Image (cartoon, rainbow, N blue to C red):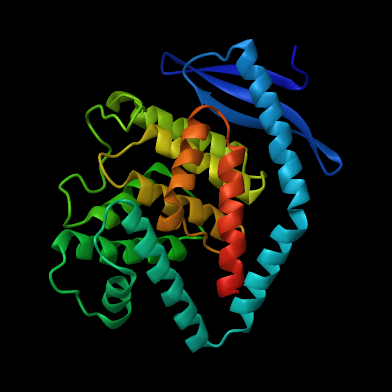
Length: 296
């Protein structure tokens, strides 16, 4: 039998949902960390895997604790000492790079140069799809929206508003959850009539685990959000914005999932579908570390 780990079942609106709960020590206090795992109870083999994963994540974050704190300090030091013009230039650079990569992952034809001209100089690239141009402009607006709302927190309405901003004048379902089933490769996300319940469960887990390290909290939230896949289109972009909202609320710099590293990112998502979040945490840390050197 796995020690310090147990399954909690919750009944919500007639449906049963399962959570893994781990009792662990944080500093001098004992704390229960809860993770939503889905609609089906885990097997003994799954429990063993979850136990090992909890321990490996805790170990990784302990090993990287000093580096993570140094990244945070360097970031805060940079923005606190920067002049107004330096802050504007820094933010513009981050927005441009973030927008280019996140949209490129989803198939945008805009180059980095196109994106920079569009977002920083207001010059629309010629012979590029109007949709790609609009989505780049919208992503910048969505980024500024999360920045302006950092004092608040993630809610269903916040998620829908991010999607509305991102898909405004692009698709008719902007700001609405999908109303039909979809498939994403080998993944079959939840049925449309279960989306709101699954998002509410994710938000409940998020609120209960707000004391978790920001990198783990953001990574797990992102992976579960992508697994639910609440929209017909825009799930990856909204999910990466939400990930960075969580990091920013905890004084960490923006982490850009780079298009050139998308294979590793997608591998991390697929591993997370099977309950292994460590790979995503490691991947995001590597991006954070590299980008901190470039920007801060």
